[in-house]
Image 1 (cartoon, rainbow, N blue to C red):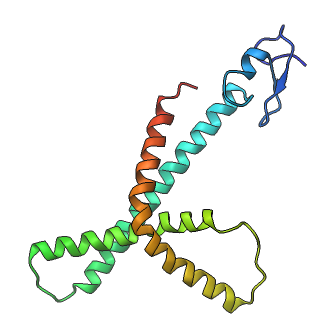
Image 2 (spheres, rainbow, N blue to C red; image 1 turned 135 degrees about the vertical axis):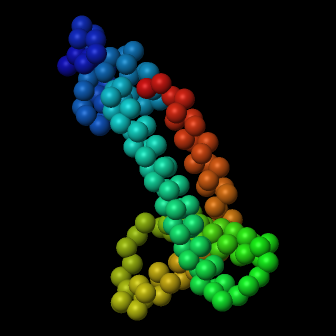
Image 3 (tube, one colour; image 1 turned 30 degrees about the vertical axis):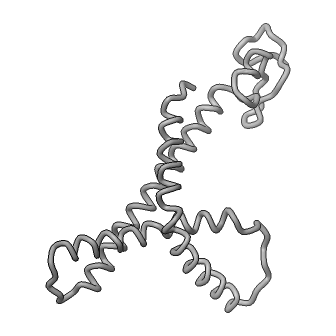
Length: 158
């Protein structure tokens, strides 16, 4: 097998995604032996995953936060400062659900538990409540980490 980019060079590695042959120069381009097109696909997939997470986090948080604040403030006439704080806290709390859930999913072991239906209901209720609490801490951390990773991926010339 020869390198797909340099046909006269013998292949010393194989791309794990598509199976193309890679010469020594192509195999050492990235930290793992992967062809340029598959590396671009991986970078684009990671970018779209980060953007989807940010949209889900803040889109869902703003939607649920505004609905909750309007529901709890219905019929009340408070000062503008109270309304801004009420909306801000609601949006922050509801935006933290996704980062909290993802953090809990990453922490818990990836094993399947055999439980009855009530066990699964309790499991998801407890996980949801814990994700709200953990999300208050993880929202800024995951946001900064995702934005930093997105800017790093934008700078990569694959």
